[in-house]
Image 1 (cartoon, rainbow, N blue to C red):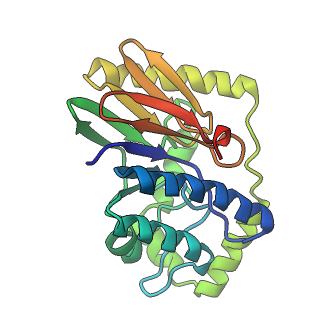
Image 2: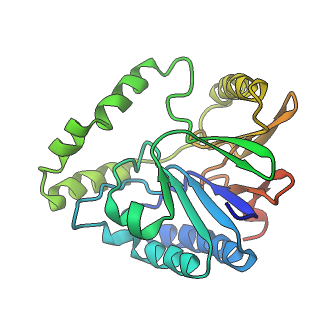
Image 3: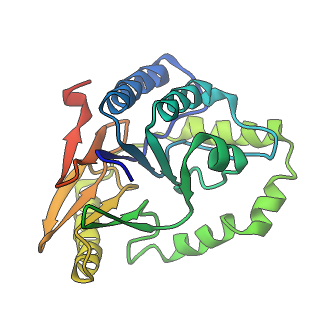
Length: 246
């Protein structure tokens, strides 16, 4: 994988192309243009879309401008990697064969320039996520996907559009975030004890970097409140708050 390697998470591109949504996209596209100019690789660490369900011969048109943007990046030699999240697991051939160079359906590991990475979207990671982990197995099952595809796409996306509109993506309370920080650092410590140098995590929208023992944990921010990315230049990993530059 080519460096610099950029990690971005929880963009939550929405089905409604409102003025606010297009402003968010423009901020993202300025970053993607920056990546296009520097070269390297771009890794989307889940929840790129607020909802994405791909039928064999149909993709959501609301994201057409994004498709074009990343295809232009790909044409210029940027490697594109996508780890599905809890909002956009249901990809098919367009995402896996056309848009991205590689799609990951579960946590993955990388080794670059002698540095080992553990990469996870992060949903279901916390000790109290028992119910969600069960739900996750159900909605990712072949049977559920087969059943959902029996819905006419117009009806399916009408339901998804309604859910997406109601999703406020509010920030969590500081007490909740404090518990999350403790839990995720404990998870990271286990990976670092097993020889990993870096852990990349999305889902929790923190936009924070932690040093745990000799490793670095990047919990990426969302693109509503804390737009950020992590970048590995071949030697070290840093977290950048993009609103500083956008």
